[in-house]
Image (cartoon, rainbow, N blue to C red; front, top):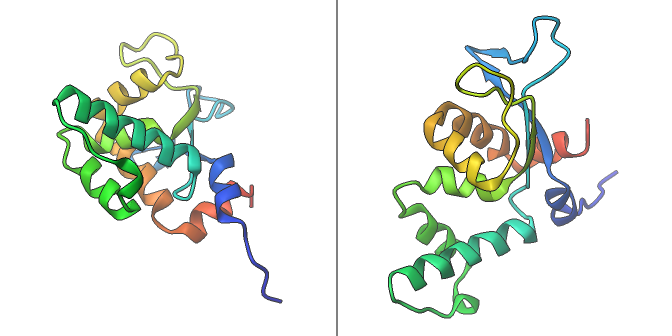
Length: 149
């Protein structure tokens, strides 16, 4: 039976993405009890769209410009955001809600999540961004992991 799915609600909850290292699921420990995971908002999340609009407004203000964001379509917003040097890192930092067991690049312990730290990690490790993008590329795939299936 066909059933409508509330993609906005599922996108707002977000989904955990288990990060891979050299094609294998990544763990912080050898016993494989501490997965390296990142929780991201889905593509239809109002929170994500709001964060993107705030970043656009901030960027415009920094450059002395102004624009009526309410008149921009979602496609125009995405195009504007992609024209930044660090667009992918910034976009995924906006989409990130949390992470677990993210190893510190210096090899000592883990890193606490913050949007600024996420942007730094995503800029330094583009393979993480590629994995997040791959997982979220298909809305059906995202909704499947967001629902815990």
